Length: 244
Image 1 (cartoon, helix red, strand yellow):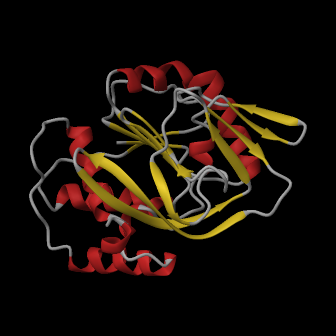
Image 2 (cartoon, one colour):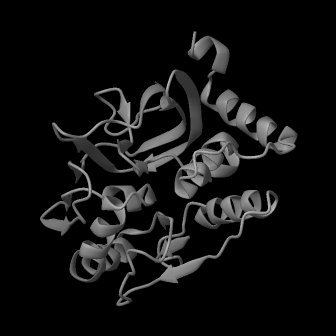
């Protein structure tokens, strides 16, 4: 696994996401190694099975946006094309697209998915949120977390939302979609942190990154399930009712 800008893009408990993946691999006997790619570092598109970009403050996001566009763009595209999993949360999600407009300033995105983000003049979109996702054929799950973003993200014609908003504002507060998914490239505004509240999603990421098609060995997830239920409750969602 490779974390991009782990010191700069880490304000939304992103280290909790990294730790969740590491622990759930090690508990199953799956070898896990974490590397970092910081400002100015060349990115090896073949060195990891999963790449992660967290959230950051505006100043740090500007630095990372420039580095993504000028240093890491081609490598990140190559990693996506070979099927590596790329997960981006909040500020990292905003940089997956074409651009992020901040008033008179426009930050270039890495262009992995067809979307753009605009910093709106209205209030920030803040609160507990939950979305319905369909990552496994024939099965729906609820992904729960916390959103806090001033940017409004708009998907292009070729992009598909990660999920349907059950509670919260989602990408822009208007179209009912949250996040984006293009193959193994996923972006979302949900954090707080995301994966400890959604152990099933962490396992989906691990299994997809391994690409073996094998079912992961079950774990004792009593605490993880309780965390998921609490996150849904905070968002005002009952999973069984939400999914019919």
